[in-house]
Length: 113
Length: 112
Image 1: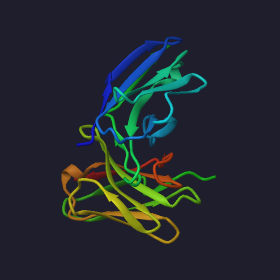
Image 2: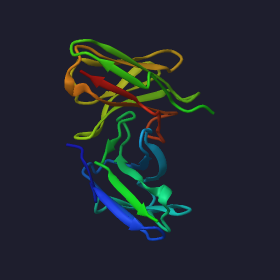
Image 3: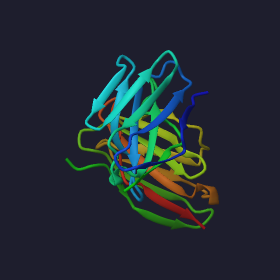
Image 4: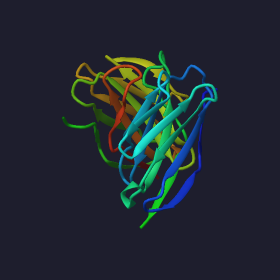
């Protein structure tokens, strides 16, 4: 069935370092891959997304890469700051499935000052 | 533009009762999806509505149901509550299929 695996489950970095979170999806028809950041007591917030016709997308300190052949995509955060500390979720979806997102299990990122 | 609004924010119910949660999407968005979030199972898709029609449904028992009104507001209902239904229920809206989905803050349901 549809599945998204996310690693690592926890990640601790020093302020200013880079952080990388990786996801692998099983459904080869998936064509939309968003990333969400969830802070305590809040709903997930969309931070960046990528479609299957693009290999990489960047927005300031955040970038996402997609490898369709290997069916994996990654989130890269550079120059991390304490306010980047949160749980990050990757997700995948495809056309003809309505709004159904298949989420990874999440990565708890801790940025130490 | 106002974000996705979910009410109530917190609920405590007793086993066997039923509950209704409400979601008001971003103005102009016609798609509303519901998710259940628990520490053990993560974020799981419940169902999605678009223009008052359910387009997709996840693997949840029939006790979980939903509907959407002509103004795109959506409600989900859980009947015969079980302890395992305790979770954060999240609603997301988008303006069309397979595009950016924006989440509300969720309703924290506790079943005792």
